[in-house]
Length: 101
Image (cartoon, rainbow, N blue to C red; front, side, top):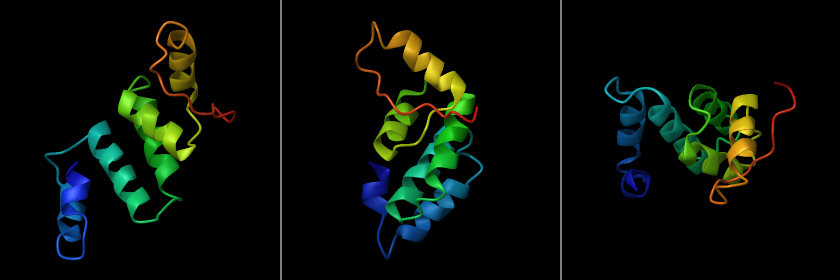
């Protein structure tokens, strides 16, 4: 993965530029920012970024998997998506539903 190749003292700044670059926009950029925040130990930022992706794309499999991996509660739409489809699609990751939404 790109993060593995560019993370380091000599090239880490390139990831910062990539995450901020206007050519990469939307949920994929937000998910990349969440993964980068996790790698850098900024755990406070991860849930908000993952939730942002799942608010826009409730069925985004990579974001669902990352939410499960990080213990990020799912927004209501994403939780419904998982609940509705998990009976016939056992490959869907699960994460706790957010009770605040």
